[in-house]
Length: 128
Image (tube, rainbow, N blue to C red; front, side, top):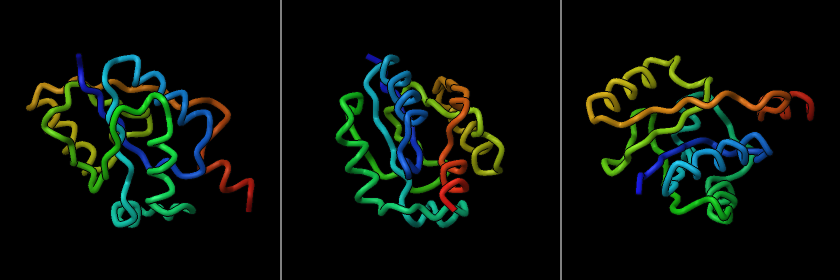
């Protein structure tokens, strides 16, 4: 069985998150990384919910086989076969470096498009 890795902040969890997780789960055993508070800060994000709360939500999903802390943009466990990312991923220097690391390790990268009509950023803006 393939080991699939997907990471995110998972703040203000919505159906776009769930859709991506479910699609990734269909590829194999799904390990989900939850961005730590320090990593979020380093990429300019300020989650509303604590790391512990976001992790608890991800752990409760039936599609989650394992949850881990995602600590930086190039973090990738050695046992990963497939890395799933969103279409907004791969633009930063750190993400480009991660892509090179994955290619060297032979890790398949699958890019899923964002779910139209929903995003955490959009939700935040509308709530303000």
